[in-house]
Image 1: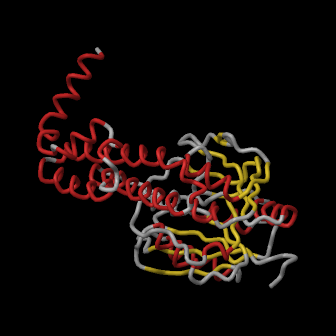
Image 2: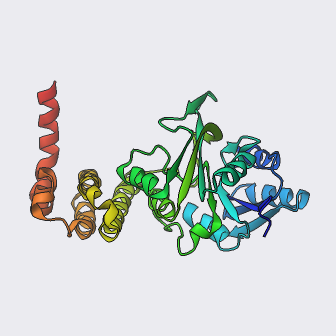
Image 3: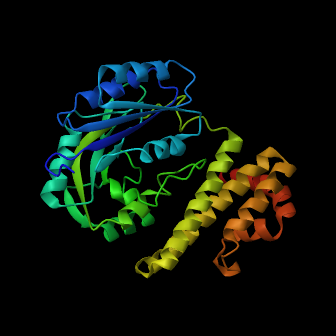
Amino acid sequence: MNNTNPLVSIIVPVYKVERYIHRSIDSLLRQTYNNLEIILVDDGSPDNCPFICDKYAMQDNRIRVIHKSNGGLSDARNAALNVMTGQYVTFVDSDDYIADNMIEKFIETVKLYQCNMVVAGMNIIDKNNQIYDYRSTLTSTLSTGIDITRKLLKDVFPFNFVCAKIFESSLFEEIRFPVGRHYEDTATTYKLTHKCERIYCIADCLYFYELEREGNITSELNTSKAIKSYIDGCLNSREQIFFCQKHKDFSDLLPVLTKRLQLWALLAIQSAISLGYKEYMFYYHQIRIYIRSLSYTQRMTHLQIALTFPIIYYSLYPLLSRLKKMYKN
């Protein structure tokens, strides 16, 4: 293992990003740090992306391509995690790109502070190609894994996604992204930070995030998919509750996580009403599973009514919503 210039694996899931993929891969090839393993995962993309990936691989032996049937963002990332060989790993979405010195800056920071993970700031690109600095509360500082995990669970740490970060690859032992679930980063990142002793945050914005992500792996939510995303939010919150119950250092966060679970549940129930009674009852029974562990007194008033009297709530909620709007006006 080369500890002086360790191998860094860059994982890039690819799906319907023909408009952006050249910009993304070119930014990886311009890196001032050269010891790279670039893994392009063609997630069954129906456009020319598979051909483009193969062409890049023929031009640079640091690039390897995985072709697979469509399984979603998590499945694509996991496919690369299963074969990567780098001592460190970072993730880049194929419609985004990175600063030329991002990997070099990450490795310099890892060496300087002997940390398991480095977090960078991010630039946001809007639909007019205007770039906005998104540092938020991120400052250059060294933190413990427990401190960052606490901030992630409280939702006060601005970057819960895995992009704009570098990880020791060993952190992913026994950890993979949940396949078929929305908010896969929220479900995963806190587990990784909890395994870290030291995490360094860089205020520099080294990652460029494309806000208009039409057609990519994470886009295109209709009403049913939106409800599915709310239910996935319930699942994430319930897993975080179990995590805090297991790790007593975080037990004081249980009230916050319980309220978050209830909010996801209420969003799902209220949204399902628009789909009709049959769909509403289908989602109602799913949601009950996730909040069964909550005591009656912990539940918010709307949620109490929805779970105790689902048919009445289905009938009355549209009327209550209209009355509320009339009252405000």
